[in-house]
Length: 264
Image (cartoon, rainbow, N blue to C red; front, top):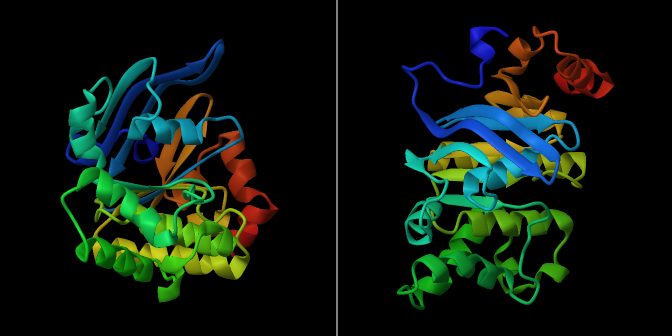
């Protein structure tokens, strides 16, 4: 592995996410062992790996939904492992999360879904401001204004993802976690979503942690790609530099028919 492909940044570079020695297991099934990863501020980092390599488990460990058996996780300069809930909550409000398929509350309208994190973290905010914020976030996510009054069941799959993104943006986050945001979208919809993420990164100065299988997204918007294999992050780099490594999964993934098509 070349120094540039290491999951650990040089000492002279600051990381907004820092993972060291992470170990996750479910019973006897070990998912991560001695996993290290650094994420630079302001970058869009893609996280890839085969089925069962623990991409979502890694994200859940970083955001505090999964307690690792061993290791350290720092986000925005703060330790997240074993932190008291009241302290962790003050850090969590600085990031937004788009889970797979949007994970919207089905009994709430889109606007009410966007209000959920606002009500949780800033209960003192009342109407009319409480009603104005969702309309702004909904517009930022590329949805029409009338989407706010609709329920998730009334939206297409692509619109539900954008509604989930609007909720993730509700608290003006510094960090954005996206879990398979373009899965299930047609090529035009996926490309539009990729462009939206790029625009939001530039406008809001976001750092984006992106789990995806979409090779087009990796080539189009990711500054670096982290590869999960062998229970750890084996390399983090640009795709061009990753292709110089001789790991079989990297070569099969990026040099396969779909990888060549995305590169073209």
